[in-house]
Image (cartoon, rainbow, N blue to C red; front, side, top):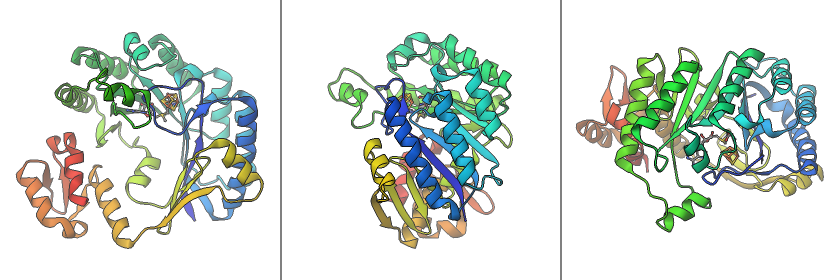
Length: 363
Ligand SMILES: C[S@@+](CC[C@H](N)C(=O)[O-])C[C@H]1O[C@@H](n2cnc3c(N)ncnc32)[C@H](O)[C@@H]1O
Ligand code: SF4
């Protein structure tokens, strides 16, 4: 039985210039057709599914209207056995949070929110093309708390052009005052195909790697001082509030992904659904496959992936699993990027900062 289920909801009220996730603007008819198709796909996989973790990602799942969300949730409850679900996350954009929807989500069993705040500085929010203000994000956070959500994660971005160390510190401190259970702090990446990628290529936007390194270290210091464990390069959690769903990916567990562009990995086979919502919906509804890419992963490749992702987490890499890379690990240790405990390798502070360099061991 597959224990981890991802559902990709590809609609956003507004498209951010840095984002490369598969998404589109929400049009009513396309959303309705997508929900029909998603329920057909869910029903098809139902016999192999007994999710312990469920993740509504996107896009912006909270962009669905109340009635669209209600239909989706009722449909999923009708076709899937959700009795084993322990963690059910939904990604939200602060601009799309409303009390009636929050109650609907809670009643359906969703118990974790991941909200894209990004920054508490209105000028930077504008620079990121966000439609919400810091005040709206704060209001949305309190609304979710009042509705009854006890497990909230906030996404933040550092490395934004013109974001000083002081501004980043203010964003971290503001976040800490709200006391969320989990914080994701991502360094801004310039993803191919995005507006920011183009602007950087033209020299209009510039990254400052030294400042970004200082911002990363500041986040680690401040968040750890306030009781958040740095359990993965970009993720910090209070005790037992790590994302079980993401941890399952990083530890190489099988997972199923539904919806356009969603990946699945089951028993060494990996596949991806079509990255186009209309085609995904029409193919699924006409009984054709929505898969546009698949591969069989060799046991060696799976072991490499597990090692590379595992090392980025607080689980590290057990000595017995690290044997193929022993020499390279020792070199990284000499450079101060890795250290050992009695049974495993772990990233040092500097190693976390240079995790991509360490990751080259596995290439
Ligand atoms: C798929 S988005 C979902 C959240 C929701 N749609 C929103 O934007 O509020 C997940 C998170 O990825 C992060 N993200 C997306 N693109 C990024 C990029 N190019 N660099 C850094 N972080 C990025 C943002 O922090 C965002 O909140
Ligand atoms: S960051 Fe979120 S709201 Fe912005 S385009 Fe990406 S998924 Fe949509």
